[in-house]
Image (cartoon, rainbow, N blue to C red; front, side, top):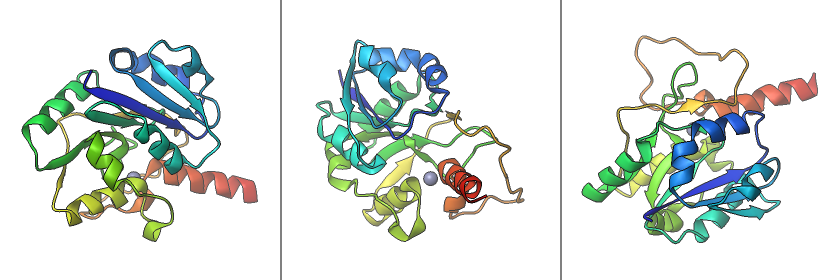
Length: 207
Ligand SMILES: [Zn+2]
């Protein structure tokens, strides 16, 4: 087996069953390392999953999982994300044939498109990601994806994608999509659905 799926769970969305069902083919094909803080119990009984309960930050959970990967490639999957069925296979193929590419990732389908590729879909060479992954907030207010993509750029490496999109399940409120004639070249971290959700929750708590 050439790839391991790592899934850090901070607080599982109510769509977790749907995400598992819709990612079933991918989840059945590769070994899985789950680092669960809350709500990911469903993985305890999954045959090919190694389950850890860990009360840590999301980024420490990513690192914890990454340290336990024994395969050449690793998929960093967020549990609110549905991947196209042939994505992982094609991503590995592209990495194998393009040594200058650091990782492959996808953006989400509309209406949750971020205008940047999502870290929670990314496929990497395990050894390299282990060396490079150092995201934790605030990092200049950049989301995990934008921070890591700019880091790859400074290392002189490409972040690439494939002709497909992932589906984001978590955000159910009406997305505030700003319509511009040309998409911004440097994406704003505010366009990130997870961060947008955080802001939303924050407002509710204060109200
Ligand atoms: Zn992002």
